[in-house]
Length: 408
Ligand code: DCP
Ligand code: CA
Image 1: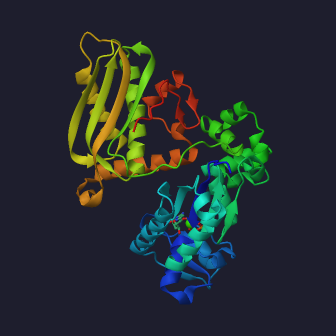
Image 2: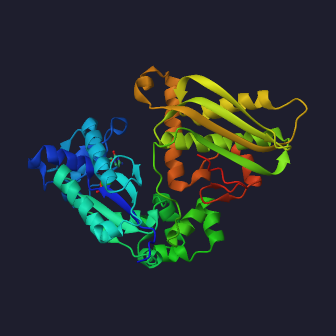
Image 3: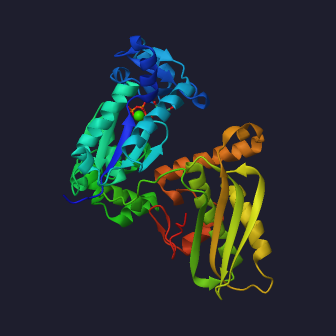
């Protein structure tokens, strides 16, 4: 048997509601709603499938939910319980494969490539995972299996609730083709409207749209949509937490003395590092700039922060100070620039000590991460990185640089 890539996407059904139903079995099989997070009062966070039959869904104003389904039980969320359940869920998955990428609380990707020999088949492995989650947590998980992360995600979603759906290697495109475009990650309600107005309502139709047309409507993320619609996604299952440091660097096509280009590149690389740092839920205490001059001499300069930080702004501002100091007055041309963070710490209790402007900055960074995750990295650009648009071609999820900035 050939060992093609097999990725699972595992997602718990009606997560918050199901945890409440485990704690209060009287609520099982009934329409139940958990209220929104503290920062999003007044909306449905999670609705049981019985409540969904009445049209209720996450994000719906509670007032509407009450009107559509007055007999539902409305519960105020208790977030520590969901955190506990999430930890147990991830621990079960980690027993099956160490190649695990948690996404949020109730979702994860698992690289199961080569595990056929242990479980008979990947499908059987998924059956075993679902069974353990049911036995130990009394929760239902839906699982999609495919050769690409994006297809596995679509499959798990489609299989809900309590589902299991495998898309054979090589079948991704034909599996996606008949589905409505809204099923494709990356297409929000606005994207759906635009595509519908162009007469595109299935992923199959989307897959045959000329790339140029997609790019004219969606910018750089048009390329990502094109790839997804065609079942192409070579992103790997990323293990979190393992890194002791995170860095990004790039070599310029032509050695440069141009300070604005150096600054713009530094900003972009800082944003890449910042986003990775936040994804790993870490803060940094040490920021390091790396420069290689045209004659290949390489220098690194570091700065230790008094307080841990995870914002793009701190990484960039510190990097910029180091850059200003490092650039020699006679201006030697630069061949490579890089920025890294180390001395990584868990956020812990430090958050309480942050002043309100830092907290606001962290919120902003999180919001940007969210949009970028949905629409691609270049969907949001700072004033500085826009300069890069003229120099590097934006690809689906960032700028294509001569040296992919992927050093961890
Ligand atoms: N969540 C939230 N606000 C939202 C969406 C979700 O607070 N707008 C929370 C509550 C969910 C949990 O995140 O229980 C997981 O989100 P999902 O989108 O996976 O939704 P569910 O798990 O509730 O349902 P599904 O069965 O569709 O996965
Ligand atoms: Ca879920």
